[in-house]
Amino acid sequence: MAQAAEGAKSVSPYAYQLTEIYGLPVTNSMVTSWVFSLSIILVFRMVARKPKLIPTRGQVVVEGLIGSVYEIVEPVVGKHMIKHTFPLLLGFFTFILFHNWSGLLPGVGTFGFYDEFGHFNYWYRPANADLNMTVALSMVSFVAWLYFILRYAGLKVILFDLFGNKADKKDVPAALYYLFFIIFFLVGIIEIISILLRPVSLSFRLFGNVFGGENLLTSMTGLVPYIVPVPFYFLEILIGLVQALVFTMLVSVYIGLICNHEGAEHAH
View: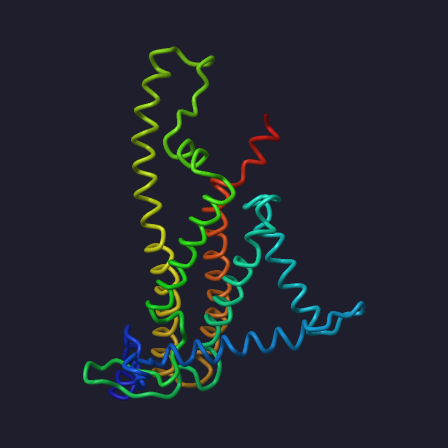
């Protein structure tokens, strides 16, 4: 029981600093992110550099990935915006998916040490199990969202979407119609608060799920090293896929809410 309790200790919520480069800390999650990011780039370049009419197995995988993500996000952002936003959304999905799964590979999240607080520090730590990485991803998505809505929707559309009176003057009484100006203005203020909190929710959702999965695998492996942890590895594969899809879809929804008015135009 003592050995099981020792093995079930939790993973540290903080990345472990390995060294410094010109005074800047280099953590285990940073090293893992560099290695896997470079691996993703090299593999995709090797597979998709020269597409063939009769695709190879690797080309089929890449084309399937691109086609699947395209079919999912295209109705959300709209046909007009998909050509502008798809490279970013595909990058988000691919980057997050492989980094979510990086903790399942041999050597990642395996070797390390316990600190004085009983937390297990990996020499190689999954990038998305570090809050710094998920905050960076959410901030990139927020800046990209600002660019897209300002570039392709415009300030006038944004202000109307946030504060504009959406009621039709012909369908409601005049007194109620002017009251709606106040109501929609207050709703717009609430919406701005919600927008400012989006990076927080995006970063903590992804971090919480990946970090929780690392703790789960560490605890189960410490309690029963063989056979029993296997189902949890399959569970983490599913969770990694779902979280990559959720992050990408939420960014798509945020863009589509303002930039995608094709449904409204069609109905009109």
